[in-house]
Length: 152
Ligand SMILES: [Zn+2]
Image (tube, rainbow, N blue to C red; front, side, top):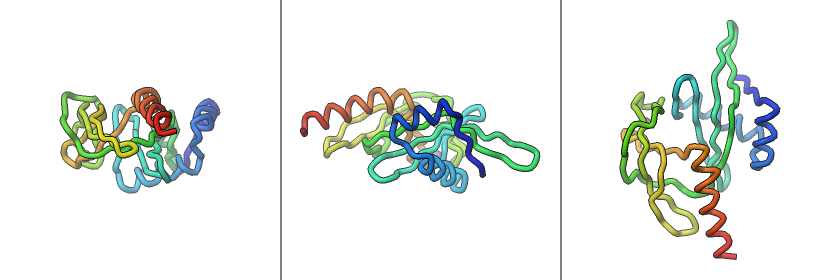
């Protein structure tokens, strides 16, 4: 499947240090395993690449002869998402793999050996969890920065 990355998105991912090859890897794995979140035609997939978890938010445009993925955004975080702590309420996302509604909830997160509970979108059936963009780029990035400063 072809992957199209609009210029404005290329600029954002460049600033975030994400390579186009990483985006391709995330989308390809998600499409072959069907492990992703879906909501109104939007897809959110993730894959661990090196030390970071790379997320890609994309649409699938189906043409007459082929389909392609149009990337809306991509982001990363280094905090490791562990087991689900709780599931609070509907998130609007569906876990494509389980075909089950995914919930807003909390997962145990680990970073630099410190474990804390933090918010995430969770699938109670397969136990997978995802950090949405605002959380990853704001909250998790701030926590990572704080820990790195402490250690430095
Ligand atoms: Zn699931």
